Length: 386
Image: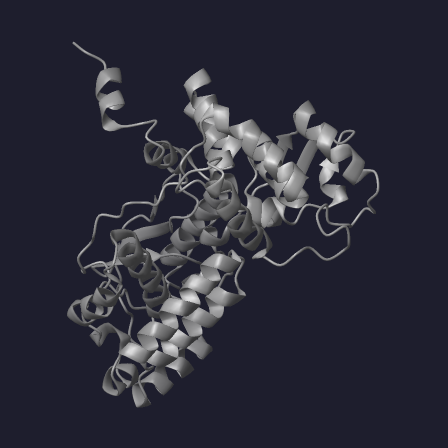
């Protein structure tokens, strides 16, 4: 038995403060750089990138760093895995095709804890791209799909920068996930042209509009009225947070709403305060409900995810004809109006981040920029001078 001499550098953690970004341990092993995202190569189930908090992620990264160092010192890195050897053997006979990897990637995404809308968008771009690529491309290796071909695919969605960039982003997610299944970094989408996306604004309401709109909805669309009132007063998102509220979500004599991590987009436990004017409207409804009853359907089953969109479309046409509402004003405009009001009053971006339930401060800054409340000119004026 011959002795294999190895050389390596000390494993280092590469991470940042964004829970969504993948972190890893890097080091040189036999003069080749290594990036370890999990504990597979030391025979342990350690996966920092599945952590639910930055603190947990940091602890798992330190544990992975320690185990890799120990394995390198003992000369047992990487652990030989029988299953991976079998997979490698199979792949040497028949290389995993692009279409198979994409199918597995989208299947995994649809099983994961993502919003229904996001899953729908991923599924849509997967089907469109599957129908676009040629038979030889589908059967070939995923790394062989070029940026030129992807640009040709994306050119179908050039009616607006936003539409194009949404398709580009979602396709990138699928191809990257597919590449990871085969330990390949797929860069083709990143190499395609970007387009400036102009978001379709949920135009904020003028203060003089709010009460007339809410009064109209109160008379003609009671459920929509309650939804819009809560969107404005509690900062919750209408379609996936407010629509699903039940009696048990209301705490402390019905003055607060408590949502678990699985009940809101941010994925964290969230508590919002209910102002007195909204609580007065809620009390007659809540007093008649069972613990699991939905506040709109009044049963254990909520209305479908399109319920408020459909109702809003009907109400919008009538309110627009009456001059109560203007173009690009939506249900989300109530949330945007509240955000502008708080920012102008406090100039506190971190408070606004908490109230809106954004995952990080960058999202809030982008939110304010899209509302025209925060721009590069403000940054310039705020910069320290010598």
